Image 1 (cartoon, rainbow, N blue to C red):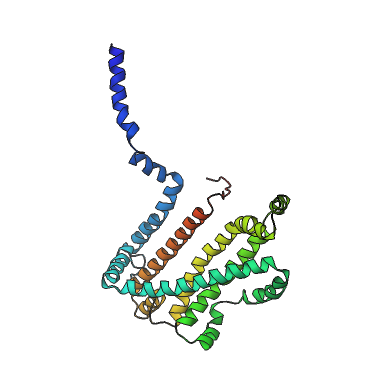
Image 2 (image 1 turned 30 degrees about the vertical axis):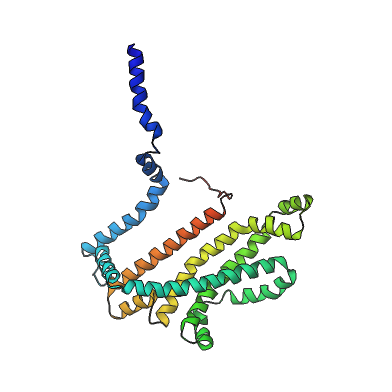
Length: 286
């Protein structure tokens, strides 16, 4: 009888847990694994060291303001709407330039990988133009397109185009020939091989080119806005530098860093959704 009672009590105690979803504690513990914890903690450690160095006076405020002062300035420009205005201007340029580069880069890359004739025509041109510094071409872009929005978008386009096109070409040419032979042995025609074998197998490399170009678009954007613009985050930073407003300079840099990081996370998320079948290799280090 005593055994039945104890068993009944244990069953009642465990019954609610069986109907509950995964406990919140387990989810947090799973997310805060050793790998994720290092990713989350490293920026905060850098900020703490930065705050300590600035507060004890090892460096003057105009040279390296404390993060708390930078955050106060950041909150002020958020409340005033200045940050939103400059961010919208910058993101509009970046999105248009990046989107154009993605469309033309992937399309030209596929065409070059498909046709030997097109490869012979475009490969020398790509290799001649690719090493040229984007900022060395800014005077030419200003002469051709003026100092308005078009020149800024074309500079971003140039920065992003070549990594996307070259990764597309490399992805198609790097497909294992055994996959192509297997598709042919099953009766697949050339169009089916492209649609069902070559492009899917090349997608990881193509997505890598697209993800790399997100950072390049922000780098080109900030540079051109510093040189010739009356709006945008790059303009905000260089304008603050002219007035020695170091807190605003670092606030702008912090925003640019957060945007770049967010774009990379979004690109990684899209990559995982599109390439759920793709397994990344790891050396298994600590």
